[in-house]
Amino acid sequence: MKTQVAIIGSGPSGLLLGQLLHQQGIDNILLDRVSPAYILGRIRAGVIEQGFVGLMKEAGVAERMLREGEIHHEVDIAVHGDYHTINLTELTGGKSVTVYGQTEITHDLMEARTASGQLSFYEATNVKPHDMKSDKPFVTFEKDGETHRIDCDYIAGCDGSHGVCRAAIPKGILTEYERIYPFGWLGLLSDTPPVNYELIYVKSDEGFALCSKRSETRSRYYVQVPLDEKVENWSDDRFWDELKRRIPEDAANRLVTGPSIEKSIAPLRSFVVEPMQYGRLFLLGDAAHIVPPTGAKGLNLAASDVNTLYRILIKTYKEGRTDLTQRYSEIALRRVWNGVRFSWWMTNMLHHFYRDSIEDKIRDSELNFFLASEHRRRILAEQYVGLPYEDID
Image (tube, rainbow, N blue to C red; front, side, top):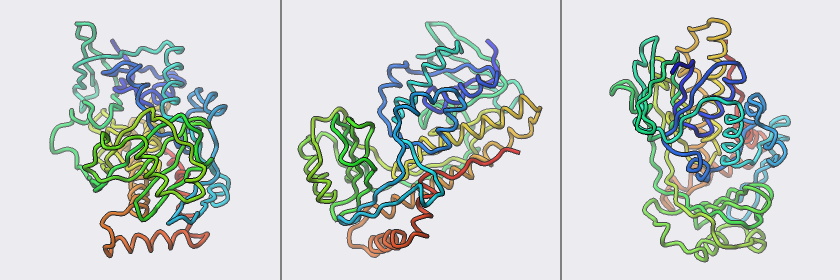
């Protein structure tokens, strides 16, 4: 088989890249080691920057997002019971975020890919990229007992932090930067109305909490727990009781509880690899970087990577600008590090690390400092709604 771009991984970044390229007449084949049902079963967050919404529009798959997604103009930060509203739209000159679940994004992109007739191989095993440093890379994989080969111009590694693409880069090429946080988020998903229309980030004496939503009938809540905590130790009742202890009293009084649909603990981690490419293999999304969910940047940084590579490949195929592919990592990393820094900053200000330490007191002071003036709240708002994508020249 031959194609222009082989895409390994069919999460949102792989599917979005494939759809955008297809819209420009750039042929691509997609591979994934798991089934579509497995991918759609993964429950993830969905606070979407305007840049991401714009990419969905450009890919021709934004209709349901625009119809069902909720535009949010504000976000609330509650500190020891007191609300501080960050008016995103006023502070950023009209920008906002959209709440639309990652599962829904993936569903829309999968439907569009099926309708387009583009070639996809799910439950492909032993996927391997080859000759990435040459001008004739290829990918091999096994499917239904047969070995297949895809000759291509470029390979997009969208296969996550445990995928084959980053692992295929020879040792000594990549530099890894990592921070492991000493706590995790215990999350509960329930078919209950959200406690608040806007998201509420909570800092309390008991620890961090987040009240978020997937729709008007489905809610997602989180509480900070020690890194060694076990989800089995948390009944639904214990979770709801703990959440009520942390959120403001008025929110606790109107909180609607119910049985959990899903409950899990996610450790928090900051991770980046440099460079984000090796020859004609490009790393996107979790294959190259992971951030704590505090700043709602994980999925949005993946979209930023997609935008960068997509714009580069358009100029490569339409204008012959083959020099631009060598700059993918340089360009992508500028926005990645901004997102990593913002997520780290938000995580530091809103969580307790070591109670009653000088560092903990300084974090409290920093949060109060940024919430105390419109100028400083604007700094937070501009990053939360997402920095603009860099032009590709």
